[in-house]
Length: 280
Image (spheres, one colour):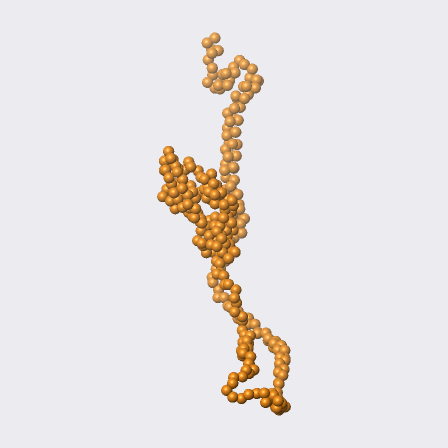
């Protein structure tokens, strides 16, 4: 019995493990061929890795071997010979057509013909009859004679120049000047009271502290020729009230009837004094 448990030194580990077992079973064959398969797999894997790693290098080496030799280009500057400029021959200009003949104005010559003087026939007034001559009295008595009509000078000849215009010359009206006084003042639709009511209804009192008391300001703006309002300013001591007053005027979108001079619409500066009382 003691001899059966003693193994020979030439036995492998697989033979010791599969002693007294069926060695034809697949497990013994796999364990027996495992070192050889492992070595074979390592060699094949290492070869594939080397081929993959060296493939780009091999490809570039083959490409460089098959590449055409580089062409050497001589880059030395060469003298450039300029060609003679082409001079165009001037074209012969055709002579301009002759001007049309100018017809001479026919001047009618009127000869000054002095008419021959014709003697007017002498009118002989027959003397009054002797009976009439005897009726006249000579001496110191005043006698009524024939009164000659008063001489009236003839009217002056009509003037050949321009007739003096008697129409009234109206001053020229400017479209850009801002007037302070006009013939027809600008009007808000419904009158100034309607404008004042719109101002009071649109004024936001929350912009004020409420303890200012009586606040006064004069608001000026320009009523344009189309009835719109521009250049709105408020001149007062309270800046908050001035700012809210300007905002309120801008919020009123109704257009005015513009002021007029000589019937023409002009730009007019309108003044709108405002006074409000704010009590806490």
